[in-house]
Length: 31
Image (tube, rainbow, N blue to C red; front, side, top):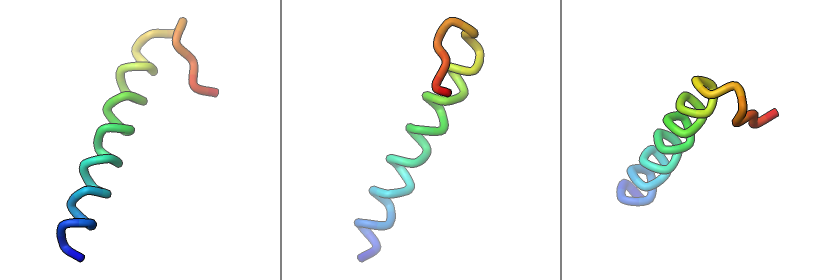
């Protein structure tokens, strides 16, 4: 259970970092 939770946190942090890097580039819009 804890391992799954850590995996979810890792995946969420990766999504957040990708969103931050995309927000820095106006050409790469997510919305």
